[in-house]
Each structure stands twice: as structure tokens, then as C-alpha cells.
Image (cartoon, rainbow, N blue to C red; front, side, top):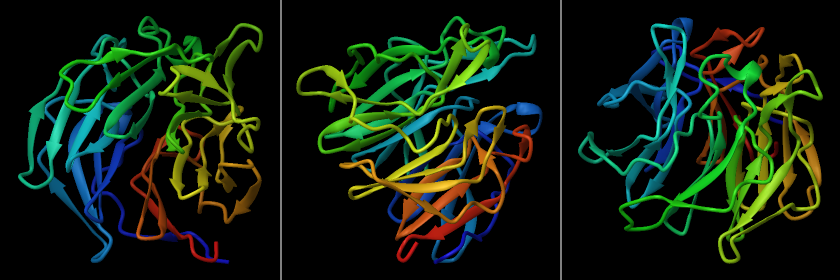
Length: 308
């Protein structure tokens, strides 16, 4: 069985980056750098030569943004930053990057600010699910009840539209699509009953055709937030993330139809709030938090999926 291997590290340490794949390359946008100062720098990884190069910076500093690739352009949506007074500002911002020209354009603002939501692209539409609650700008995640507001930017539309609320308010979930539906996987929220932040193993599925939410009949292999999720065919990969008081290195694959799971080799170290994607049969874990969950890293690991 293959093990995770180190590839070229990011030029800048960063957690909570937005990550996209286009034309065989990995694009990493913003994130939180030293002392969680938000970044607007952009890096591009070419797996063929194992090298990161700089691209045009984002117009807006932010971490916790998400991406969708539509028509050869990368939409970077939402996110936020910590202000000088220590409070957070969450953003409704949409900015559109053109890899061909290395330029940026403004897109339509969302109806609500979404920081660290789930994001997925389906049939040319962008879906944004939950995130940090817009009012949780002072106490931080430890007092954040999560957000269940969901919205969509349809192909060619100039504005976002509201969708049915997600049943479970949460931030730091991950999004994937499968068989014409959008999945919100894991995440967390402050729970008075739990006396703190609760991580979810919950999967909720939105059907655009009916405009309703359901569950697939199974849960994630473990409760996690700020984890990595990627799909290849019928297989969903989950790596790292918060689970309880710390972060972990566990990796697993599960069948999106049956929920049957199988462990994969663990990451080289515990990791959360990293970028995750699949390129040419390799699963990547990019930057994020390591150690006790507060040390930002530029480490990049890759796992070859054939035989994993």
C-alpha cells in the first residue's frame, strides 16, 4: 500500500486556503499566515515539475474562502479576516480569476457573508452551504452556533439566490457533488448541550431538482471539521481535521452509495484546515494547521490512489 510522500512545500505557510484544480495544476488562494494574518497571495503548483509559482494576488485579503471552477475561470467566494481590533469580518465577496490571463474580475456579492462554508459546483452552478454565523465576529469559533443559510449562483446569473436552509447549522463543513446532488460533509458548531464546540459526523444532501434536504442513510467514519474531502468517481476521500480536542492524521475512503469505509495510510502528521484536491490520481493535503492545531505549515503531502 502506498504511503503519503512529501512534495515541494508552499512558498508561504498558510491555513484555511481556497484550493482549485485547473488544467492539471493546483491553485491555492489566500488563507491565514503567521499569527493568522489573512493573505491575498496566490500560488500555483505544477505536479509535472514539482514546483510552486506565484500568480496575481487576490484583490481581497481573506482566509476561509472556497472555490469553484466554471468555464475555465476560478470563482473565489466568501471567507473573512481578523481586523486590528481582534474581531472578525466575514465577507460576501466573489472574485473571479482567469488562469489564462492571470487577471482578476469582480463577481456578484452573495446574499449573506459566508466564512469557511461548504462549496460545490454542479451543472455550472455554485452552491454555498453554511459557514461561520455572521454574528459570531467577537467570540470566535468557540461561541459560534454555525450558519444554515445556503445560496446558489446559477450559470449566467448576475445574482445569488437563496436555497432551503441546511438542516444542521455548521461551519467548516466540506462540499462534494454526486449523482446530481450536493453533499455537506461534517463541520462543527457551538453546542450549549455539549458545553463547547461539537464536531459532526453528519452528512446532509441537497437535491436541486426538488429543493429539499435528505440524508444518505450513513454518516462520516468519524466526527470532523476543517477536514479535507475530495471525490473521485463513487469514492469520497476524507483526511485529517478536528475531532474532539485535537487534530488527527487519519485518512479514509468510503463508497458514496453504500457508505462502506476503508482506512487509508495516515498523513505524515496530524493536519486540519488544509487544502485538499485530486490531480492525476494523487490526493493532496496542502498547508493547514499541524501539531496542536495552531501551528501553521507549508507542508504538502501526496498519496497515490491506485493501490491505496
